[in-house]
Length: 204
Image 1 (cartoon, one colour):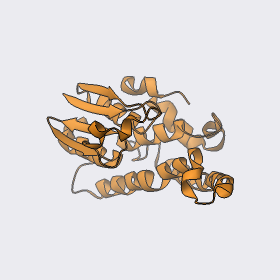
Image 2 (spheres, helix red, strand yellow):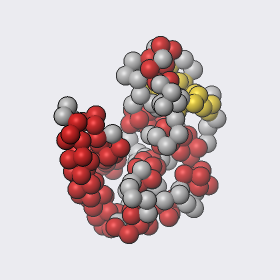
Image 3 (cartoon, helix red, strand yellow):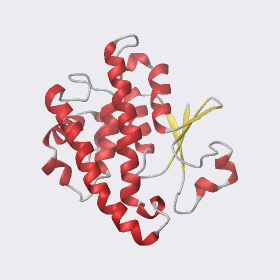
Image 4 (cartoon, helix red, strand yellow):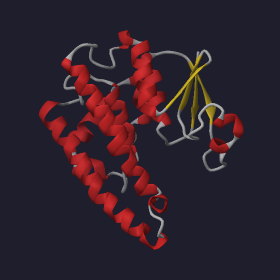
């Protein structure tokens, strides 16, 4: 059984959705970020970076969301949640996974925690204002991809990318604006609501 160290409304939900789609048993160890659980010695022994999610597989520990995604996909290829290895489509999958983890997700860190991104606290509002422009451009790129090659990020094939997209969209502010601004993203999200493993995560 996998063990997932997770907190609510975080990137942990990506891994939870992926595990549910794969259909394997797992146990959740709740981590309260507000209480500082991620800084406790026992957690830092698992992940010295002090972030969630963390996955434990029979004693093997892995952290960083994209790394966990790839690890699970490699362990469960029959789940069909990524294109086959040694295909160009697999390269495209990697490309968009890295885009989401390196470009889209960090933008939300700036949205929710702008003070962490400037040494001059009187400039925090400027960081927050800029991220709205940044996110608009990022989501427009994704919306255009879905318009040209949808309904999912990999065309007709549902993949782990769509779970990532779903969770990132749930973080967007103001609530409900994804549907108004990015119709192809919203169409993808609505398709995900048809999947039993993801129904609890589709609430945007």
